[in-house]
Length: 304
Image (cartoon, rainbow, N blue to C red; front, side, top):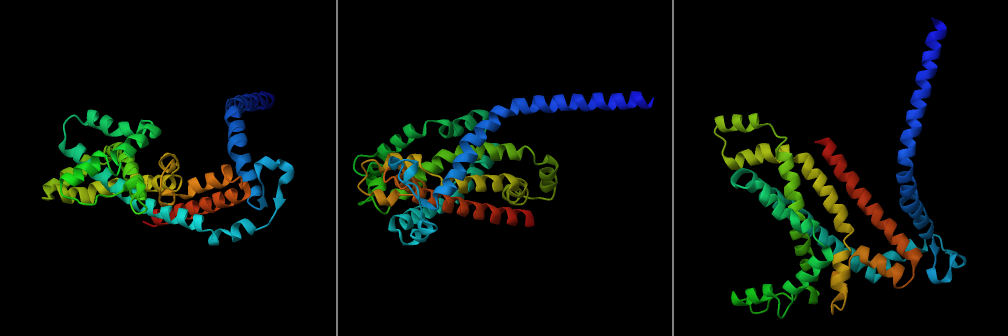
């Protein structure tokens, strides 16, 4: 009996080992890709942040400069402009897109027929080509011949915004496009979250005489709290990574600095001015900012 039990244990262990090896074999391609395209570039970027290097000089041109790349950053005018514009963009896009997404989701969920069709309609911009959408928005917000400004002038606005051609309105135009793009995504996630809220809560609230607004305030919004937290985190991260729209808008723009954001400034430093070390240092500063914001939000979410 003891030998049979020991043999059974060995057989079971061998089977588990074979299953583990099979699982690792399936995971190995993804693991190699993750290490090769994520981990190693990140480590190399961290290494470069303490060095000065131009790609055209080859690996022999890498020169150790210590913390010099981080030291000169606060005095870099372009870096400060990029950070300021990124913060403005974040403040404009994150709360407005989430609040509008929640409002539209509640209206569709409670007061609209044909919910599935409308959900698809509002979600389509999110999965459309960002390049094509940005080009369309450049036409819409053209300061002289754009439909938006033409409409504003018919309403009596004498000096409509210059949008992408204006130092004051460029980042607002980028923010409007992003809000329009992301509302559909927020609506779909909020409507999915609403299905997880028990209908008994709404029935009890109706019996107690709660109106629609109070049900939304005291049941719907708290019930969708985890979704709001997720959307806020993702929106903040994406707002600091905004690049595609700006790269298209910057082309030929007379007010390039007005829409300069940190991700695009990193690109310029790395691939236009060939300052790979300085660009890597800015990338890690951006990573640290996003990490701190995420940890702070995570802390407040857990404390509730």
